[in-house]
Image (cartoon, rainbow, N blue to C red; front, side):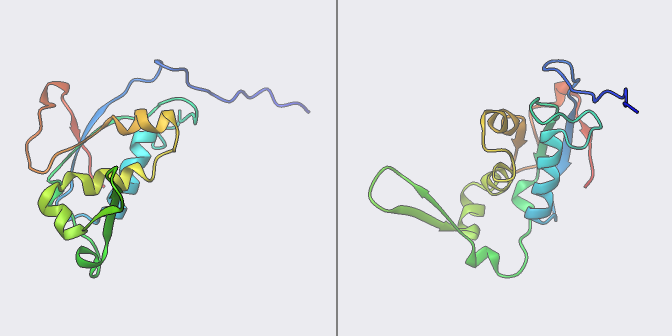
Length: 145
């Protein structure tokens, strides 16, 4: 017996993308980043298609109030290449003081696909250190994780 059921494949531009606001105050970085990555990829929808951007826009506020477990504020080290010999390093505590939105943005970036589509998905993530954001004209809805 041959099945006649068809698998739905979304087409680019066919999916209506929504805007969400997430409050990161008091949330663990890894758990929040994995939930954000799922929404950015579109895996929260039944119409998820791997090769099409079916995800939503996410605005994260209060990124300076995220939490790490254990002693990660002193032990977790971020490194990056500056173009000169050697690498620049800083701890998670230093990064929280300097640019707190980078902590969450880097955690989400590493959970997304490592290709052109993943870079497009990351552009839909807007992270802000304080409670205010400039995206009120998009009428984002509050989403709890």
